[in-house]
Image 1 (tube, rainbow, N blue to C red):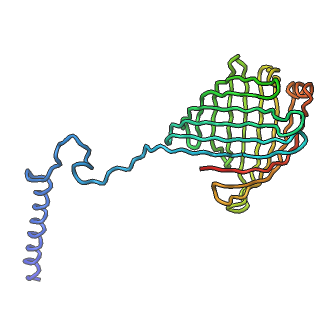
Image 2: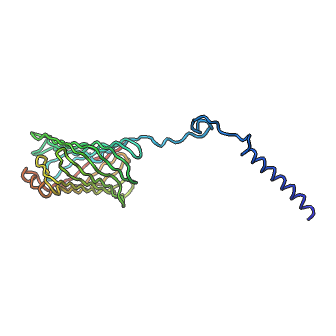
Length: 270
């Protein structure tokens, strides 16, 4: 026991010396300090440069490039969109159109383009605003109009993709559109996509075949096979039903108000 105390004392002295040295190097007058240069620390102290988190990206999706055949004339349809920007702010463009390939209306068609500013306002949800331009073409039927666009695009609970949008035309006419899709994965490559589209308007626009109230409802079912994620052919069916005053305008023009179609198409993105 009498040998323990001298050893214990030597140990305390050693520990005290180490602590004093550490304190002197860390807080004394001779402690190293970072040079004051006005530059970021990673340029003066050898730190790893920060990761760039404000990069810009772009994306293009041809969601539907399809040939349709059914009760009405055969037609070729396109629905495409894309964006450029960062995580919060983007420029969006959207385009869709249909051109008749046979029947009484061969060569006629209609389409629209949109240019939008998009802002992330909640997880998985963007607010979008901008302009939309519509155009119809054919024998004696060329006409167009411009809209202001206000809408949202995002992912709802249970993985529904929704696009509710409000339009105000150059003449003050107000209309609305809702598009909803859902992907059912049978495998990682075989995917069934139900689609629902609804259009409505507050005012009549007979020149464009639009009446007030609910204009039409369209249901679609497309089965695609992703040979690659970016390349997916598909087959499917669609059913369009016009309603209310819009249906009356179609009957007067000799256009069917019910249209069931088979579709064959291609989905691409890059």
